[in-house]
Amino acid sequence: MDIRHQIHGGSPSSSSTTSSTSSQTHHPITTTTTTTSADPMHSWWESISKARSRINLLSTLLPDPNPISSLADSDSPANSLLSSFTAYDAVSTSLISSPFSGSGSDPLCNWLYDTFLSSDPNLRLVVLNFIPIISNLYLSRIYNYNNHNNSTPPSLSGFEAVLLAIYSSETKARAGKPVTISIPDLSQPSLYHSPRVSNQNSNSSSASNYGYGSKKKVSSSRVTASRPAATVAVVAAPLEPQTAIKSTKRATIVGVALDCYHRQIAQMPAWSKVDFCQFSAGWAGQDCACKSEFDESEHVGVTSFEDGIVENGNESEGSVVEEMKSLAIQGDNEDNNGGVGVKGTRILLPWELLQPTLRILGHCLLGPLNTNEVKDAASVAVRCLYARGSHDLVPQAILATRSLIQLDKRAREAAAVAAASAANTVGSNANTPSKAKKPEILLVSK
Image 1: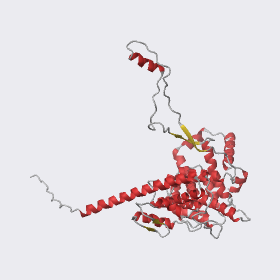
Image 2 (image 1 turned 135 degrees about the horizontal axis):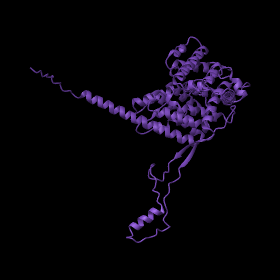
Image 3 (image 1 turned 90 degrees about the vertical axis):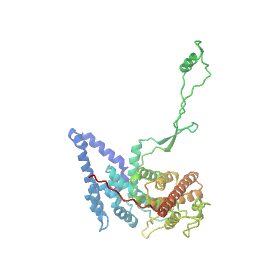
Image 4 (image 1 turned 45 degrees about the vertical axis):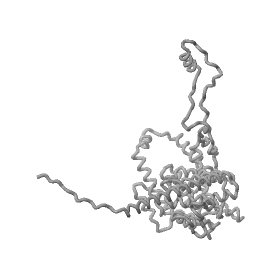
């Protein structure tokens, strides 16, 4: 199915909704069909068959030789595809190296679009796995076109179709309602405190009990306590249906796709998170000395990111510096095919795009199950975004990135202290002489 018909003919969600409605009108569902669809064994086998067919189709779209077709033989092919670095690397390399990637006729974009519309949650996770690389290529190529004033704009309708499919799904899920959170009343002594609600009857009865038989009327000036109203904050405004990606709605649509990626980030593999952190550092595009201003302290010592040397530091800090040096931003990395390099390009960062980016980086930085590679890459990205926010004078970005940097420093200091105490414990146990074991005596009854 060609994506260009979906782009120019209307939104994917509207076309699918219309077809499903007409089919329900002319072909009502019978009792036998409902029973079959409700059978868990049938649903499981249908999901397995669908995932195997998608894997076999993907193996034909990638250059040979590729071992992706063997993933279809596993018991859970969708999960095997999600956790396969070979599949992720093959798809990412094809999207980056091909000059026609992202167009309406791109077979990989058609595969991603159809896979996301399959309504299988496991297959949707596979598509969300590629959101970082899709967002980076899409935003970077648009930025390069606008800055270089090229005569022919790049064809990115394939990327736009995938992003619009995710946006339309999220719009339908939110049902026109904003995303809100309840903020506790900080004037109360605790989050779980609520004042007692007293009424006039309880007050009059208590007064008669202590009045020795005399009925006293309670003064009407006594004010009854009431429960304070909860403060509701709007995190995201209601989404409007979109049939195309306009320049004014581009950041919102890409931000919604990143927000969907964040909600499923616990199931995303480590290499996808590392790529997103590198892309975020490239989007910031700020490789100046102010990004390391929080790494200079009296206790830790002065850190030199250019030379990779740590004075008065420890081994863990030295490894972080080496990682930051290896992930240093090189500016605009464009390849010969008109694409962008792995580390991305400096782009505009409105709050609609920066907010989900910081949420993802916060998880990568502080998630307890993340690897050190993910945490180090997120640490570099957060410092680059702090430098970008400081130069652009964006208060929201400065406050958010400073908080993440402080949390990262405290976590690393606590880890260094724990490692030092563990090393001291092991050393003391090794130097302590151990007593010789007494021979075991076995009592045998005669």
